[in-house]
Length: 460
Image (cartoon, rainbow, N blue to C red; front, top):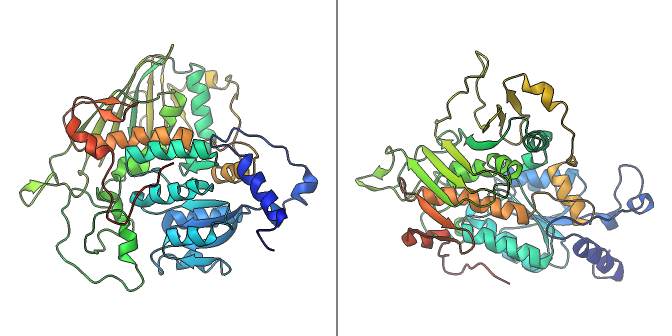
């Protein structure tokens, strides 16, 4: 079918004009339009391109395809790592450079998924947004706080449907957490603990830059992998996966898991932006070869956030733990039971509640509170699934709840904790409106970053 004919143009207008960036756009589509039960006519399918076809990016592509999206283009800088996905879509055109892909496929695609390393997220997502494409981007949304703010503004202005890949936002556990807290089951919440075991478990931290310079694998385009990051020799210590532990490419455990874990207290307690944050890093790994380690994240960290009162809601102190650190075990926890390896603990005036990552089912302490929780009405709409939300919203049906108007500010909060790790033991006073550290201007250059020559973040 010629995508430039009037039918295609009408479909494209339907897809792009009815779905707002916030996802709050509802269109009832008659059954005769959608076709038979369990079938979606080609004219109503979302034609999308996937950037980053290995790891989580590949999982997103295959999941979206299984939900009915039509994969017409794929992009990855590593031909071997992406093979497991590209072989499943033989009709899709494969690219190495997402810029060339978007230039060539602009008239054909409705939407783009982004599953690259953190340091390239904003580049891909912004390029797609400015072309009027819907975007599904893995977490954290961006590599810098400034990038998160710019993506949020651009998505709203372009009125495209967006979703960040914090899949637990769509879970039943996330909704129960909201409903129980807001119904006052554990009383007034002024203290929250959040933690992850990822640092040092899936990648190394507290290490210096490798001195060896092995050859670049023949199937990897290292220059494109670096993208906007400063140039450096290839080493398997960076890619794949291990890039998360390096400042130039990743955002550490906080960036990797914060958008999954911090998401829930931010949502349930309507926390908004913090006013202050402080990190305490371990000394191990902070010095390499007698010099401060500015290459990789510290081995372990605790980060303290202060959130101000919000209307009738009290101030909240939130503490993040990583690198094997954990909050104290609640006294009410039954003998032999442990807190999950990644999760959230809420301290209320009448009880406590905890759950695992990705919106795990909440558990109440003491157990007597369970009876009260059973009386709480289910006031929040249930989700058909995180990726399904986005696909439906691309077609003007329903809501993508982790759209950039929500996940952008969430990412800013998470990345503020990452920023605090650059000045351990010092309390940062944060101005969210101006995106500036009020009491330490020397940190403000790290709110954003300088891109390598030939790369830039386009703005509206």
